[in-house]
Structures are given as C-alpha cells and as structure tokens.
Image 1 (cartoon, one colour):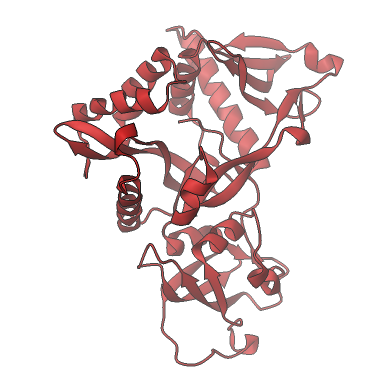
Image 2 (tube, helix red, strand yellow):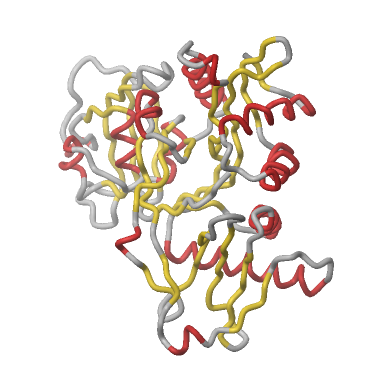
Length: 358
C-alpha cells in the first residue's frame, strides 16, 4: 500500500478503464494528463500492477468565511479478481488517517452505491439541484459566446476570466459551501467538457453575463451545468436527487465555519461539552469542549469528571453525537434528534453546491 509518485500514477489507467468502461478514451486522456498533475493516488500494488486504488483530487472549498483544501475521492476501484479481500477498507482507513494528520476538515465523494461508504462514516450532504432554461421570451433571446474550443487569444482568456468571476459571485450569493471558481478552475473545466465533445456557453443579456450553460456526452447528450437566475434559468424541484456524500475528518478545523445564531439567547459565547463517537479516527473519538461565538467556533480536547454547570455559567448541556450525525447536521443537510435542543442556538452551514465530476 503506497502513494504513487510521478509517472507511477499512469499505472492506474488499466484499472481505471476496467472499472469505469463508460468513460471515453478522450475523457481518460484528459483525466490522466490533467488531474494527475496535483492529485494523490493511494494504491495496492503487486509486481508493478495496481490492484486497488483511491484518487484524492484536491479542491479549494469555501465554507462561509473559511477556504480549505478538501479532497474529492474518485477512482475508487479494485481489480475484479482481487475484490472481497479487504483492500478497499485498508485503503480508506489509511487515507482518512493521513487526512487527519494533514488537518483536512472534510472529504467528499459521489457514491456509486451509498452502502459502500456508510461503514466509513460518510453521509449525504448535498441534494443535487435541477435547473432548466427559462421559457420567458427574454431568456430565449440570450446571446451565447462559447468557451469551447479554446482559442489562444487575449479575448478568449478575458472572457474565460470574466466567466470565472461571474461563477464565483453567483455561487457566493446562493450557497455557503462550494468549490472556489477562478481562471484555473475554468481552464480545467473547459478541457474536461471538451474531452466529451461538449460545449460551454456564456449567455449574455446585452453586455452582462446572465447564465452559464454546458452540455457534453459522445453517445448520450447530457446537461453538464446550468447556472443562472430567473427568468433565464429556473429551478426544477422534481429533478433533485442525493448527490454528494461527505465525512468530517478534523472536527476542530471544520467547526471554524460554525457559529452561534445572532438571536441565540446565551450571551456572546458559550461552551458545549460534546461526546463525539468516531470509531475509525481515534483522534476524534472522545470528549471535547466546543467554544461557540457569534463569528465562529473552536474545539479542544477535554476531560470532565462531572456534568458541567448550566447555561448561566457559560456551559450548554452536554451533547453526544456520532461523526455521521455531526457531518449531516453541520452541513445543514439533516438535524439528528439529539440536536433539537440546540437548533435555536447553533447555526450550521446552509446551502451546499458541489457539482464536480472528477
């Protein structure tokens, strides 16, 4: 079990093509040329052949006022004849331990099957929204300027940069958790979409960007993305489905994005004793003091021999949570029964948007 280095990473392609036959040769060319530049691949190798692997693809993710590197897990696969030998369990446990040492706040993935990742503490945090083009006359009159194919010109680079700035503003005005958009992100995104004969259009209403739209697929055409507001873009609630699972890796880092509600009736700050249950990451499991304020929070490991005092002394009643419950709650996806008494005090994140493919 090792992290592959440099050109060693290319040895994963044979297993990738076996495990993901739906990916076109052109998409694999894009992935193994572009994404392997900055990712990490933890693998089981035998006689130079990759038997099982997990790819850690890094993204800069905004979470309220925080901006963290969080790894998106892809390429989770075991060679067909080597399955059911515990390879993947060992890889995932090793990977999570390494992330914990790196103080990574969380990691995320798009599951092929939810049941594979539940035993490792992953839960859904993101309901993938559906968007459709508006039917208003004003929406259908939009003018499009394509970003694919790329042209090596100052005008093209200017348009790509403006599109990245628009995406960042649009996401920031609608969501609290999303991958940071910049010119490098857009450059990689256009290459990804182009690998599947896609198009990425910047839609203008007059001189102003009003929406971004992308489609791809060599055999079956699919909408890759559609960002914008009414009347240009409409939300389609019937298209929503669970999309992304995540797991908090370092709770003391993650809670920096969590704060007391403005109307919380416990003064400017308070302390919540918390018993966190995480059987897979020993550094997380046990007792913590969670210090909460109006602008953020922090956690410290703490032992106590008796129940802390009530709210009048700055303490909230103790709380017991599993790492799964904490993840679902603090991402704003689902509040477990145990936190009902704290819902008027603690403000979890609201609005997750993670639509990355790889």
